[in-house]
Image 1 (cartoon, helix red, strand yellow):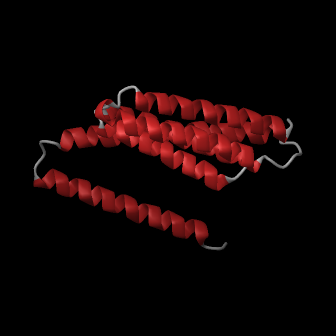
Image 2 (cartoon, helix red, strand yellow; image 1 turned 60 degrees about the vertical axis):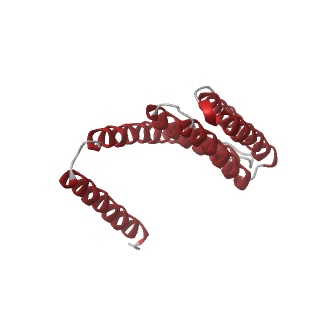
Image 3 (cartoon, rainbow, N blue to C red; image 1 turned 90 degrees about the vertical axis):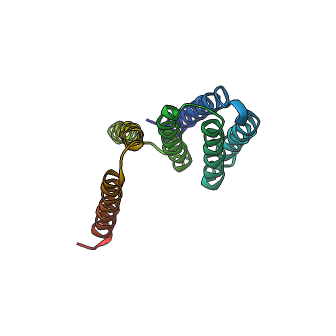
Length: 175
């Protein structure tokens, strides 16, 4: 498959997800709607600019603006259950957008490599969605919990950080 064709498909998919996230942020924003509209419009414009100039920094700025739109929606009254969907959409848009920018140099890409990358991206998005849902469920369960439950949550968070640091060190160590 031609890299240009894969890049075009990635750009369209990233733009589509960004528009969906923006629309999803604007609709339930309530009191935060003006901020959500401004941030979403800036995010979409910056995303288009990122693809026009093919620079990752503009893509990252677009994603920050879209995240601000989602935050404004959540602050303005959108249900907390929407947060995992916002996160998964932005994460997937980031993956697709960066891939589109990486593929700006011509050539070809093997179908098996593209399929593997798409499977990894989908798995990452679904894992992010599931992890966010678990966090929301845990937060909801902990609302009425006592000090012991909060301490257990703090220990679990610390253990997660220890595992992440160990994995990062393992990935960096040679051999």
